[in-house]
Length: 480
Image (cartoon, rainbow, N blue to C red; front, side):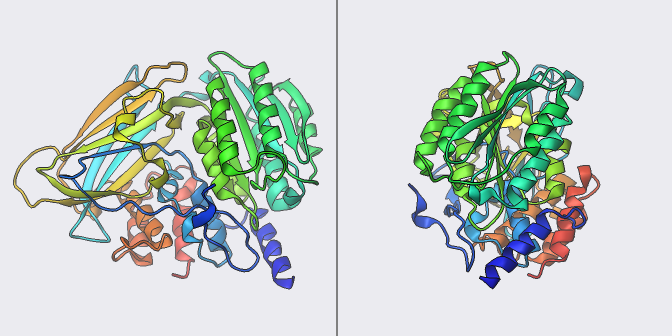
């Protein structure tokens, strides 16, 4: 009991402080002592021979939840469970210095090759995408429904308390013609605030202040009610979005991950997007929340402290506005140049090759000004041939279109030493190498704290809101 109380005291201190720089359950990894958190352990992608499988196809992932969750563990002096580590979310927590799309397109593409810092006999290939930046004054009107878990498990400052602060912060960003409704759920769903225009900020904040926790958790009922209200107030050509805040401890009505995914897949056809915000510790259902965000045309973030509230609700507010949906990546490797490859992360975003051209297959979303990065580890042939290494094909739909658009980019630049590559490449390698360490990966090679810091410290010229510097401080204070 004393251990549990100490744990929650530490969690509350960390999450409320602004001074710190701050069906498939068989493979879920148990956590020590007071933890009862749920994660899905995906097997890492192996190396694939190009002669056997020259094509790699997957969906984009714009989530950052796994990184923020890791930070919570490190601040507590603990190593995150390896099942919680999704390396693509570590990388995509950060913004990269990518060019804007060409006229008429909503996404840009780029690539780079370098030596692999944790295995110098191998190489890294970075691919990057950026969603079109829409100036804040030109963002379409929004129809939001805040769906807030007020069950008994949410009754703590690091859960309901931090959500109340976050949603109040977001209210300040609303335009007068934006709309917000608030749905709560515990034993049953209820409407705390009917859809209200953004010029009534005081009324919206008063409703948020009234939130209190208690009871069981009827998550599915809350989801259904939220989507109904979002549909009733639907804005054609606007931003229609449900934002769910919870620890994921659903226990009334349909509550298994499979049941909730089925519900979300049905709702996504309405043209309403979904953002899922995870909070707290001890009983966090990370697996369920990441999956419903994945299947619901949405993204998943974890809110671990006050600075993360600012990141999600203020500094990166434009990510709530989708510019590319059902975004898919297909890399075709040149068998004359590449012997084998391994995609780092994205294990639960894999698609069949034939899914790439099928516009009925769901894939990921990209928000305004959002960057997406993926890295491959390659084994190259020692050849003097001057040919492209791979072709990077990308499909996406504009928000109000049903037919996908194809972009193509040839990857042919000569690999450089990692320390002579761009800051984008060095920082992606730093985060990727750190992720391999947290994943306890068999492929981590010589990745170390020193290597991560060397790469990271040389990659901070482009650093919106100092998140790269915060990462370096986190690693500096981390005991390997």
